[in-house]
Image 1 (cartoon, rainbow, N blue to C red):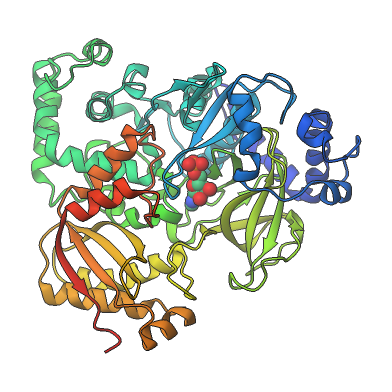
Image 2: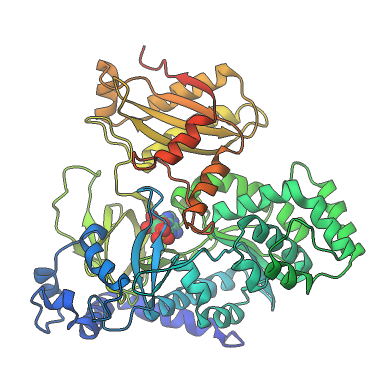
Length: 575
Ligand code: AMP
């Protein structure tokens, strides 16, 4: 029997997905044809001499690989009010701001109805697969989602984050209802202008509707961790609000106050039960299932730069499974997680062959093969790493996204991708090359030494290549949950230095052209300050990813970090 809930038919969604993934090669050809038929007469494509051809060979022969930098002048004209079909025939409805946490400033990306449609498509697919493993009942979701600030471009288009553009779309609400994912908080909380007030009210509304909550989620895992770190501090105040039916005076935003007060009634029984449960917890382990007893899982992006937060998330989630959310970007979606039982460290994403046209640049060990020719979606090899190239319905043609993925296998005839890292080398002084993944490995190794000490944990980290000192060296910033002994931190510092095994690094360290790695421990709360810095510049908390490397353009972040250093260690690894 077909599983049908409201407007959602789980079996049909899975059947359709199976159909397109079985015929991935044909579907890719057709998808490219559709994109080019729709947009062939845009200024950008016309200028490349395609002359109405829509086949893959002509497309590759005429259209160059580009980066965001190459498209900036076109996007800028659109933002400035040029309504001619420059990149897409369909109107551009707004501008998305990609988080740009590595470059230090958000990138402008074209947003149109196609992206809303694609988002709903991928939400439905991943929900269908999730629901097959963890069936939900009629209910809601405690979602830590936040609309971000918006502004008007010179040409009158709204510019905000891609997620905010999606939350504002009329299809968002109805899809969320269809897939039992309606947020427990009213819109005023999601779109509130003060992050801390919205966060408090998300927690409060989540507690008020606790019985109905089917899962707890955020776009990125980091937001869930931040939410429960706040809960650890604010739980008694939340209980007080529920007991008295009066919203805390910390909520000063009138829209949020009115909307939340309208659903808050004195409920001493609920307040006491929450209080008792919180008191009974040991170091907040399992707080989510304890308070949200009907929740089936915790859901969000937990891969890539979010991997670091899964340990803390597991702690809060207790017995509940952590389910990885889909893979995409402000530029467009790529793949869905169709194996919700797979833990975050081995999660893969199955590419949707009808969501865009995908090509892959073979990387083979990230060096040497810079000029390798891109290959098609179904031509990739298991075990190999690639950089993704996207062609979308939203005006990107052979666009280098900058992500590196590894093919872990196939689902029907479309690849399952594991996210590896951002392509850009993030740490490099001279001939050394280290990526985000290499940094993560070094930090993971050193964290093992830290975790061996009871009650010590690494809350967050970032890095920076200090080229000003002579010799240049890597600087790593750590924020810890508690004080650590100097001997332990010194051995962590040495361990990180040794774990960067890139031959260029090792060689340079040996001959002293790269100096000893520096570990700076920062005061508790420093990474919150970094978060607030990005929020003040228009990044939404839901989209925020701690930059794992602070580039020279990010002087403000570097200043925040440097101002709060409480301990400094230099590696003794190569003595
Ligand atoms: P933004 O455009 O700011 O939303 O950031 C998009 C980038 O976030 C992608 O290009 C990836 O580098 C990263 N990202 C998005 N989804 C995932 C995922 N599921 N796993 C790992 N990284 C992801």
